Amino acid sequence: MKNRKIIGYSVIGLIFSAMVFAGVFVLGSSTDTDTSAQKEVARNVKTDPDLKIEGVMNVTGLDSGADQERIIVVMHKMTHQKVIADDKWGAIPMTKSTIQEVYDIVDGTDIALKQELLTILTAWKEGRFDNIVQDHNYLWKIAGGDLGKAYGIMSKTQEMRYAATNFEEEVAAVIYEELGFRL
Image (cartoon, rainbow, N blue to C red; front, side):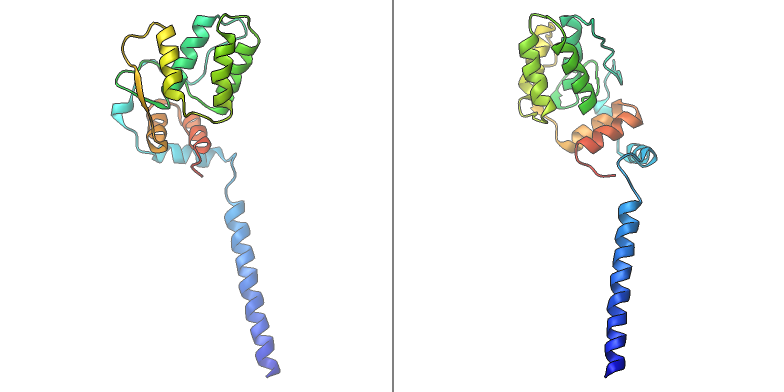
């Protein structure tokens, strides 16, 4: 009877140790900063030729001296990542870092639409994109748009394919993570 208890406790201890080891191995094998894993995910996401657009930039290209027109063009191109429209020209990734970059630039200017743009950027910083179609169409109209009015919001899967199709692997990988896809 005593041997059975010892064997039972040993088996339980062995199982528990195996579970702890497996948990450490799985959790420790991948980190959010593992760029090789990010690149691998980016390579394996199915691209969509219908989502390919011209005029793609992987950075905003803005500096502290940017004028209102240039800022609006950049913000408009950022919305393309999230909206559905029949025609799009130009794309700039909408990531936490690019949103913050544009916010800081707008906040440091005296442009006429400063408050309106900061309101839009604040929502984006907070991850609120429920008005992204209206944001796009507002920016599109100010920029003189006549083709490409947005009429819907992309699903996370559509957005992931859009990123894979149009942006560099490193940029697309950041977008996947920010959309909640784990590497």
